[in-house]
Image (cartoon, rainbow, N blue to C red; front, top):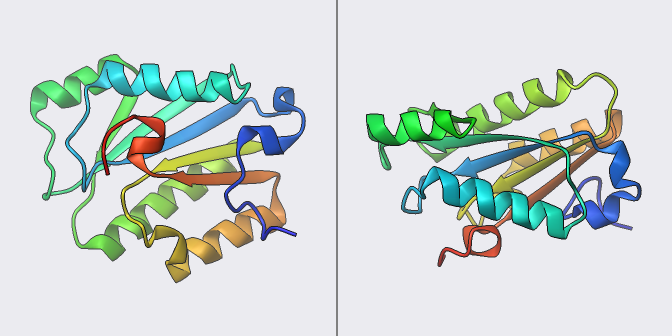
Length: 158
């Protein structure tokens, strides 16, 4: 039996109609910042392939390592995506992503939720805090989380 919420896709959720919203968290730290329209098109295509057609909330996390220009930030906002600047090291970035994830999940009332994290960080799922938050959310909610490499969803080389 799989640990709670680990590597599930929308196909694993049973009735997709029960999932009314998906949060996509894009970690741009180790990739070139993609065009906003590319992200929207490719993420929505991937979700449609999985059988999901509902609301998608997309957040792009970035740091000093990979800055958004004012024009890029404005373009992301125009496409309904929220660019979020995070200061600090990898650990700080993960903690802030987790805080944002918990807040988003908890504001979804009692509906089933699905979070798709797109990150090049190959150790993200091994991070103790990340694993703990995933498990706690899964124990108390109908919570599903998938972590994917950028090339899997966006078609960008890792």
